Length: 196
Image 1 (cartoon, rainbow, N blue to C red):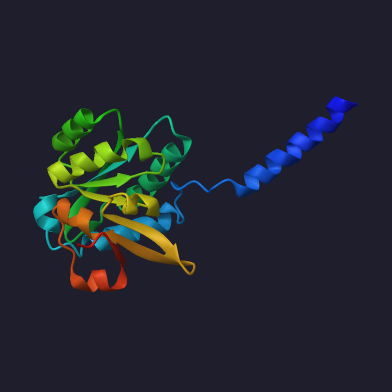
Image 2: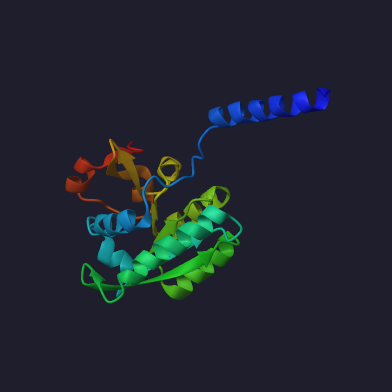
């Protein structure tokens, strides 16, 4: 009888703890179908866009294959980018690649080989974030994400939500370190952080 009384008490305690557990900081408040068109538009406000992209816009979707959220986001972002096949961004054709993050050296090699100029960083990539950002800074790649916390941690551009509406997030310090120069008209409507 003692054991049967303990079990419901333990379950109730677990339920209470779950209520007060912090939400994952790596969540995307908006789906890829909302994010991607906005992020592609943001890229056109970078005065250095054409110089960085070269003859075509190549986007790498960086993910951790062992993380379920990361794998799911990669599929979502890839399916939306696939719908943009044949379209251009500032008259440049666009293509994308999925990149399983296995280390900074492999990422750098792949980026150079495929001439990638933009990295989209999926949720579930927190452990790899510092290494990815080091590569992006060294190679002057623009970083994008749908995870607002990643922008606070050094990704250049992200999408969040304010009052149930999409909000463009710009980490100005990170953007400049990656070689981007965003137009003032974009900065006026974005939530800007990391200013010096």
